[in-house]
Length: 415
Image (cartoon, helix red, strand yellow):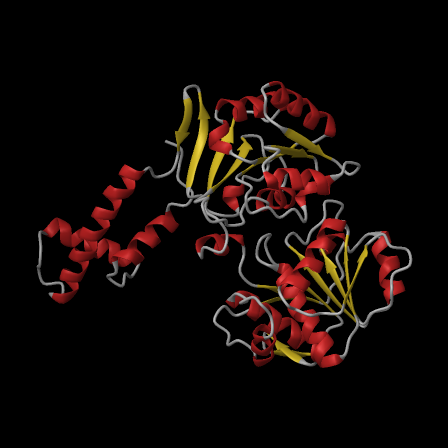
């Protein structure tokens, strides 16, 4: 039963006290989500004007980079302090567990936390089970873990709560708030340039990177198979580009450390790095053709903001089933051409011209309003203003007009 959080809902009291005790300032949407989860887990609550009993399980659906770990730890702190619950945190990959342990320690959450792998056959008992990357909760190993932990409450965290095998996720409540689109527009996630190449193969991806390595910077490349990863890595290595192929059997912690230190410029993977890999210094991700879920996971790796990197880059090909531009608006958009890249968005000159025109139209609209529609300008200008007023009511602010123009132009036609 999905529950959308009202965007302007007041921040619940318990969340303020929780946030005051940690060394991080939660974002407004994080406070709203945590407040709603607490309401659902602690007792009867109202959803869409219907009173419902306390939920045994709640899933938070929130984008990669939105701070699901922070939200989960705030709920864990509440459960421990208020209800005296023993908290168990589980994830499929060890790096996710390491991340939550680090956040818990460094940010001062102070949760007495037990972390276990989803594949642990003898997990400890607990009262609250937090499932990171909860799209894996439908697996057989998770059924065994649920039974062994015996928790009375379950909190799931996921950016993509759907599965390719169509197995159902059994959470009583789902809490959603800001999506990727809104987080990009609000500046919590990085603006990005979107590139479309003609084909996606080890050869074409390597050639694209090697033509302009400075454009792409530190990059992550996703392919369908390990063989394709190694083929592309061979081409990059032959050109003198340090790279690593990350697999389920490789020492990914050491590989990621070399990447973050700059000793490795490119990492290549099939699926291992689609979850739980958080590197703000990552500049570009090359996404293999895929559907919505995998695409959002792959592209989401690059959207974390970092000072000194004004925008990130996402590269896809024409054959992909889900262009990431359908999920979030790019700052600029390019397609591959014979002589380089062709912009299919607004270039700087068009933007300047548009801003000037918008300012003139706002002035004309205000003049028309002040004169009560009785003249105040040439007849043609008056007709334009009346037409604009019929399409959309303006508040006579240039900044708002520019923003609305940009939002209407988020999916420009090819020209």
